[in-house]
Amino acid sequence: MGFVSVLAYAQKLVGERLQPGEIAVDATAGTGVDTLFLAQKSGPRGTVYSFDIQEEALNRTRERLQGQPGLSEVRLIAKSHHVMKEAVEPAHLGKIAAVMFNLGYLPGADSGVITLPETTLPALEAACRLLRRGGVLTAVLYPGHAGGGQEAHAVQDWAEQLPGAEYEALTYRFVNREATAPYLIGVSKRK
Image 1 (cartoon, rainbow, N blue to C red):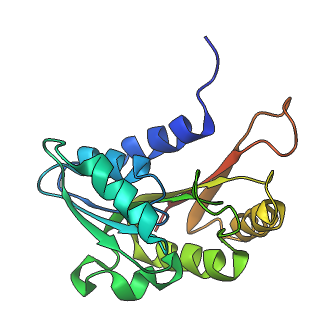
Image 2: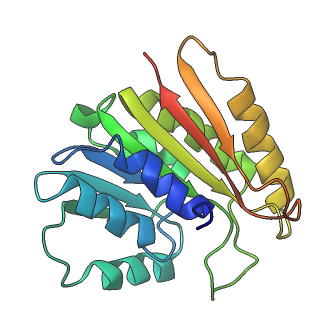
Image 3: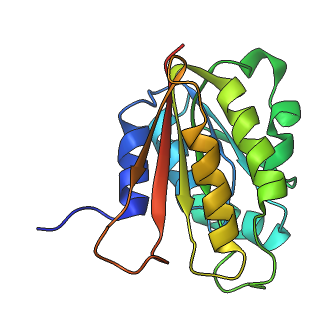
């Protein structure tokens, strides 16, 4: 049996922290996989904010959620992830248990519409401010597409600069695969 994929490891990190009734954010709704995971994990008493700039992504997410039992309240937000702090209800500030980023582009859609460091870095900063103590942030990076390497490098630099007294940051990647293979940055808020 091999190691779990970067996507599965991101869900593992979040699954260990996010409790029923808590609040979570999917910063990049995409196909809705992470939104569904968060909504199942936080359950009917929880809340999930799901952001995407593409209506197609929000529609795919909506379809994935349809008919699933026991989900939290899901708020689909047609805005960029960099405005998440302003879009999250004020009562939820500093109480978010998990924020998930799956960067890159929407599979099967216009591959020219990608996440960019100019919005991703402010979104990561906002996510850190939204997290509760012990909360977790995951960012799956895709350096193999046009613009992906630049974004991955920027996110890696950002994570390495986080103050160790306030955050723990890790990288999960397969070192014997191509340098363009997806990998994960995980951040835990210490205080």
